[in-house]
View (tube, rainbow over the protein chains, first blue to last red):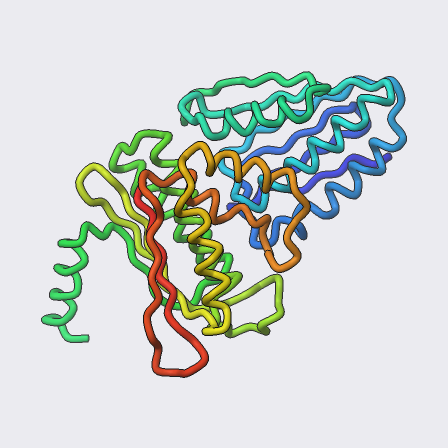
Length: 129
Length: 184
């Protein structure tokens, strides 16, 4: 399956889904005008990829500086999809990069951990630029 | 606007602690440019990272709300993308707090539902807001919402005090001016 790449803009993140090496990345800002439309293709590709996955280790790196409320909902859906694929013998590590001073982003990460306990969740604090 | 009025306008804004004010048409590009200006301004003032994120988030949520919901669209009312709608947003500092305020016309018919929605959040404690936020995150999306229905709870979560809202009459019969303010 082909890798999926969308470059970052001022208000939307870089999406770097390297399906060929089972490494996924989302980096940057996330407040597009319409989050559902922005993430639509990425979620569709991810769904196709996950459907084919068999006893594989997947690594996802999420490094978002800011995400708005509608992006939050999409991210939640995305992590739910990853969590669901684990019951089929795969394992997923989610590296959740957050500003060391930003408790809200860390809290959201912890929520994910509560709801999607199958994910190997790693919170990584980074110092503010 | 002559210099005298211009100066008076600036003095008034300065007395209110206004750091940024915009009134006009809102599009995603304008929101992006304003957000950039706001972030620089807050960084310049050496705002604490956590406060900066809260103020920035409030500013973006309110501005995008105008793009999506103001009842004064230049673009088709049913559009979901490339929208252009009118409103105003202001960011300022009073004492050791920041405020973000916004205003835009809404349809008179929409007022009761909007009031009810905000009033429900206003009576919540900080913990109840967090709880409601969690529930909303886990629920299916509201079909009437262009976002996730999380916007208002996001504002409430980041605000120090209950958010404040008011409506004001407009000359036309079908619309009223909706004002919303959050203190962070």
